[in-house]
Image (cartoon, rainbow, N blue to C red; front, side, top):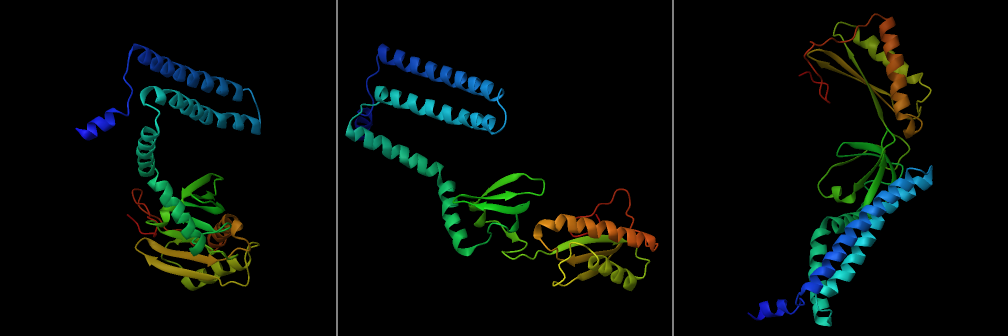
Amino acid sequence: MDDQEQYAKLFNEFDSQALITLGVILASTVLLIIVSQRGLNWLANRLHGQVRFRVFALVPLTRLLILITALAVAVPIVIEPSLRNMVTLLGAIGLAIGFALKDYVSSLIAGVVSAVELPYRPGDWVNIEGTYGEVKHVGMRTVEIVTPDDDLVAVPHLKLWDSAIYNANNGDVSLQCVASFYLHPEHEAGWVRKALRDVALTSAYLKFDKPIIVVAEEKPWGTHYRIRAYPVDPRQQFLFITDLTVRGKQVLSAAGVTPALLPPDAALDSQGAAS
């Protein structure tokens, strides 16, 4: 009974005037949000350049300010604004916010860990849960990655706790690229291996002080060759792989080496196995 009485003292007694006031506040809040969002969107759609996106960014900020103002006006009507009541209310709100933001806090802690362990840094090419690209910025909560399709992806540091981080160059200027070729099993393997190595040696993107390795692996459907080499700059990796692939196909085709053929309903997984 004491707890019930304590919590009952938090709230004011409601009369018709209080209910009407709360209703007016609610209606005004909804109306202001609708008007502000439609007005800002209308304005932004008639602007151009960077200003247009800045106006769009004001939409959620304006909505948040309206909600905070409405709560600031409504709370004293519902709760007696005494010191004891405010402390109790703020304690409950703090507990709720702390529970809701536990992942945010965990990301902040992981951000501190990432600054010490350096699993990634700006300029690294990383793969985090299927998102591959160049690290552009390491913030307190997220790491920003630009993908090969020029998409900016913000990945929370929280992934450090339970996800594998694949770092292709790890702070170095060297990044290994792999170009794959799938050939019919009936061919001169020694010649093909030498020809693919020559293709890598004659690439304009090749970094000559790094090794060139041609790996051959026999599969049920044919032979899988991989050229492993390094471009001059990690940002040239896709141009380098394309160059190796195009010129490699030309050399093999001119020599009469045929590609491997699979049944129409077969497919290859990431390891090159047929299914």
